[in-house]
Amino acid sequence: MPENSAASRISPRSLISVVVPCFNEQDVLPDTYERLTAVMSRLPDCDHELVLVDDGSTDRTWEVLQELAAHDSRLHLVRFSRNFGHQCGLLAGLREAVGDAVVMIDADLQDPPEVVPELVGRWRQGWPVVSARRTCREGESWSKRGSAYAFYRLLDMLADQPVARDTGDFRLLDRSVVDLITTLPERKLFLRGQISWAGFPETTVEYVRRPRPAGTSKYGIRRQLGLAHQALMSCSAFPARLPVLAATTSLGTAVAGSLIGHKAPRGTWALGVQLLCLGVLADYAFQEYDQTRGRPAYLVRQSVPGRSAARAARTATSAESTSSRVISGPTSPGGGTDGEAEAS
Image 1 (cartoon, helix red, strand yellow):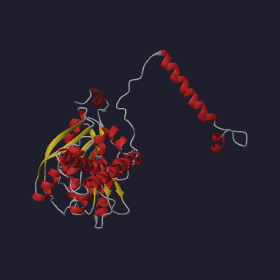
Image 2 (image 1 turned 60 degrees about the horizontal axis):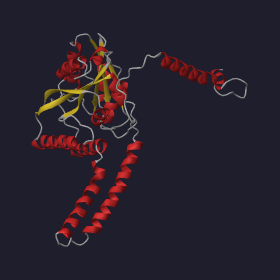
Image 3 (image 1 turned 45 degrees about the vertical axis):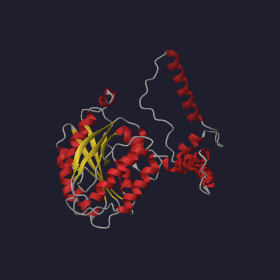
Image 4 (image 1 turned 180 degrees about the vertical axis):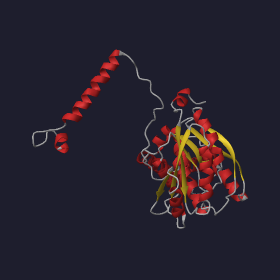
């Protein structure tokens, strides 16, 4: 359950931002706009904005967005110089959004906007992350449904931190979560994994995913495999440890065979040692990768400062000392401080 303090931070009248990445969606955008604004306008005690990101579309998507924005000041538009991908579109929208909570939803209407009020309701109860979980994927081939089913369960099994099953990027994030995610320095993005890694309390809302009313899916097999690869590399250290597991299997087989009098197949020992050395190198490479992606060593969810007189005095002294260093600064050649030289 969420903490009561999370709900108490929500103001009586909130601003909800809706982030919508768009790539060649000229046919469906007018319907997306109508349904989203209709749903958001009915939310009690809420204002809203729509942050629409054109991810390098080659059709009339940008022109359609401009036409919509000309009649609605609640639309905030972002246009990429080229196609950078769905995850980058979401990240750009999160960085542009200013709401107390941010809903991420695709433009194709497979994720129904009518679910948004339920997401907002759970957020008002105090949940900082509310994910929409698909119970059915209508209009999709058996291969697409089967691969998605297998992917989410494999990711859940191998991920270092649990990732909610059968959930895409359709979810609501509290402002505190958005502020964290948008400051992470990683360029290879899998937002679901980053949100899961952050560890904020999360709940789910179930819904039925509908067929696209217009246009075609932009996520072909190559993009699906690319996202699956990035998800596994972002969420799990398992790929780097595969050589060690293979080495353990190879050497274990050789040892067991020797104990019962069976000669191990030629090359078993050499293969095991080579895989073990490769695994050590892979683990070093993963440690370097983990350092360079720059995630903080820890996250403070809540802090309750001590109220002792000694602590208050020490804190005040420390703050005064820091302020003094900033104001005085090193002496400039002209006799004043560097800060004074810049101001003049």
